Image (cartoon, rainbow, N blue to C red; front, side, top):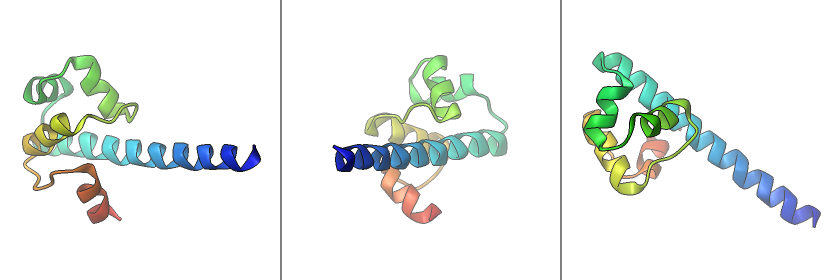
Length: 88
């Protein structure tokens, strides 16, 4: 139905916003720290490809990886929601 389609589009837009916020976080943090995606991949225990997907905003890590990401960037957050609340 039209309503279901609009709900689907709204969810997609929200996911896209979250992905872009995460991408900005990764890009800026790597730049500030003078590090690269290979370093990030090693720090958080993922492949270079996954680190690149986070960097490009094409994927959002699971909670356990997200915690490692915040730790690697020396940020006090525990969840993506915590981070997004501070960003807004």
